[in-house]
Structures are given as structure tokens and as C-alpha cells.
Length: 298
Image (cartoon, rainbow, N blue to C red):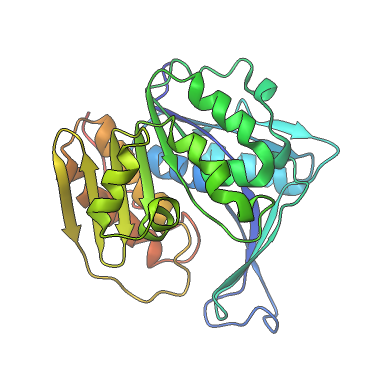
């Protein structure tokens, strides 16, 4: 089987109070899962693509749950390893305070190593995906090996996060991934931190000088793409204030990658990405709102 995309990265169990409830006083918490790469895989699977997710999970009920849910979404998890000495990571959302609490230090995924990629056919996949989170939790060497061994489209999202093992060194840790990718999907604030604050088109162009052939920039009410062959293309969209926007960027990425793998032009790819991102941004959970009625013709 040739996969459309294989992704590498951590997925955590998530706990979140119901909408409108404060974390400290909520009598119940919803159990879910979330991880940048697996979120994108779920979106791609719903769009009809063949995807696999590679990671490590603890030998605990949380890990069992994540594998079961992702398999039910059509994501291949056969290369997910289980670690009996380390736990599955945990994320707790506080929508009222707009904060996220991570409990992922020493997690099974933080110890993913290049040797864990043995037997994974990422060299044959049409595309591979890894985000900067993988480097920031301590698995940079695996992320680099993953990209170096890929022959298809190499996709990276910097995905800067606070509170991780390598958060204070995020530019240093993530830049080697950017230098190895073909397609970069980034937020405007991430590019400003990496390459200096400028207009989105200029930041994307500066980024492209470090390796990527195509740079997508997400900002407030806009998304744009710089490519050496077509220059700058920008699309505006309306934004809504939502209680749980987490996962929207991953959904955006899924839409864009799906369109690219289906040979859509840049503007069509942006439009699909915006539709997917909006659907998740305006629903609870990281993936539950991703459209199930869209199909991408190859």
C-alpha cells in the first residue's frame, strides 16, 4: 500500500469541561484526544486519503483509547509503539481562562528515537508530516531522520508551544525541520519569531530562502501562500470568537495538504483549508467538527 501521508508526532489524552464551565468548578470533564499530527491525519482520512500515524504511547488505558479512536477514523496505527515505562501524555483545557495545561514531560512520545522508525514505509509515501512540537518535546533527532528519509512531499508546521521541554529553544530546534521541508504551514507569529516581523508575504519569502518551496501563512482573517513559481496569493476570511479553537490549524493543514495532493491550484487549496479550519474552530474538540461530507477528487 502506498500511503498518501504518514505523520510522526505525539497525541495526548485531553480533558475539557463542558462549554461555559470553568475548569476549577466543573463537576465533569469530557475525555478526548489531541495531537497536531494525528489531528491532521483524522482530517485527511475524512477527506478520503490513506494515512498512517507513527508515535509512542504508554501501556495504559489512555493509550488504548487513542489507538482505538484513531483506528475508527481510518488512521493506520500499526507503527505506534507502546512503552511500559512511560505514560501517555495528558492535556487539560481551560476554555474560560483560554489556557492549556500540559502533562507530557517524560511521556512515551518524548522518547521517540530514529530507531523507532524502522520498518515504517515513509520513504514510499506521497507525503510526510511532522510539526515542531516533536522537536520541542525532545524527539528532534527522530523528526530529522523522518524528513531525511522521505522521498515525497515533506510537510512541516512549526507549531510553537509554551511549556514544553524545548520551548525556550524552539527556533533552534525547529529550524532544521524547516530547512528540510518542501511545504511549510505556519502562523504569522511563528514566522515573525523565526525570520523577523514583516508583512506576511515578506516573511514567507524570507522563509523560502531557508529551504521550503512553498510557504503558507495563517493570520487573523487571512491566509496566504508564497511560492517561487507563482509569487504571493492571499485569501481573506471572517473570524469568529470561539470557546475552543484548538485543532483549527491542524484542520486547515489537512485541507491544504489534501488539495495539494489532488493537484489543486493554490487558491483552491486555501479555500478548502479555510473551510476545514473554520469547521473545527466553531465546534468543541480538536477533530469532532471536521467535515465528513467533503470529498477531494484526485
